[in-house]
Image (cartoon, protein in one colour):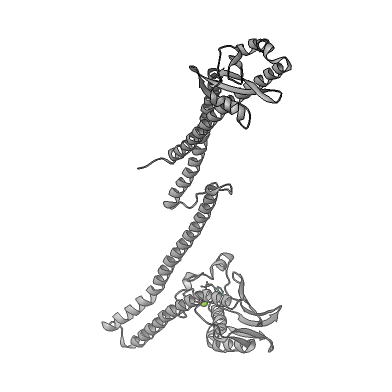
Length: 470
Ligand SMILES: Nc1ncnc2c1ncn2[C@@H]1O[C@H](COP(=O)(O)OP(=O)(O)OP(=O)(O)O)[C@@H](O)[C@H]1O
Ligand SMILES: [Mg+2]
């Protein structure tokens, strides 16, 4: 069964209101009745005391009737009947209908603790009345009493009148309460509805939704939690999308890089198989296959290496290394490559410059950058410089090569990025992986790397490694 939240709220509010009004009405009706009757009794009692005081001021029995007559007019108009009686319960004077005192009442005023009887409601003759009986004394002895009655119908009329107003006010209050309940319930429902609509939007993948939040109440807090949940979902979604894009890009890049060597290898093998390659060329073909296979192995290894560094899977064995030694090794190892292109590699570093790094990884970093310099320099020279400055060991690799424009510089750290596509079929590889690995390695050493370059003039890579911190 489905009951709208608005109705649930209304039903619960109405039940509470109805119960509250029932309790209040019943209680106040009783209270009003009690108060009215008590006041009536008190009023009769006051009359009685006044009459008795007057009578006792005179000679009791002779003037009683006269005294009573003084009160008669006033009391009659109020429907009050009263009489004086003696110790034998004989009425010796009365105004209005003659009334007798019962034995029980006489005993109560004679011997009772309070020496009086006040009955808010009792039956006398054929009507209900309020009755008051008070004794009087002569020379310290109870000599009789006064009995006053007033018909209850007058009081009942008053009570009904008061109750009528009570009912009016209950209905007005009920109406106002109901109106407030409707307004409040609607406000609640609207706030919940907004959250529900926002949730539906999120469910279909819209993470831009926002709901109004506040610290005012639980719904406000729920809204603020909802907003932060959506924020987190959006961030995760963006991360997932970025990852997916990277994965797709990577797959397409790798496939692309695999295509050329595999095509070459397949072509040569096919040629050999079908004896299409002249005997004299066979050696060349096999060298080509070997070269391309090495290229493939390098592609795989460098990718694996990149991922290992990226996911913190390598361990650096850092030590203090004399920089001059490292730069000279690079110079020596790349000597042939440089000479082939007519380039000179110069080293400029003081013997007392030390660098705190993993030896093999440091060689890998500088080797990658220097190889690039050889690759992208057709004439001129390459400088490998080292110095220590302000808590850092600084390495600079400078060339007088083709240089890069700012747009190219921005991209060089990306995997598979090559600024000049026409150079890609180079025997040394050029997958566009070198600098991306360099960047990861430098960061892994808590260092930074910067590049400045000018198209046609040359390029300078500067690496900052923090000196060993104890
Ligand atoms: N010294 C340089 N002078 C001019 N361009 C450079 C220089 N170093 C790098 N580049 C540009 O940055 C690109 C990326 O360099 P990176 O070393 O990452 O890749 P690669 O050398 O092309 O291939 P790989 O290093 O995988 O063999 C290069 O393709 C080149 O366009
Ligand atoms: Mg390179």
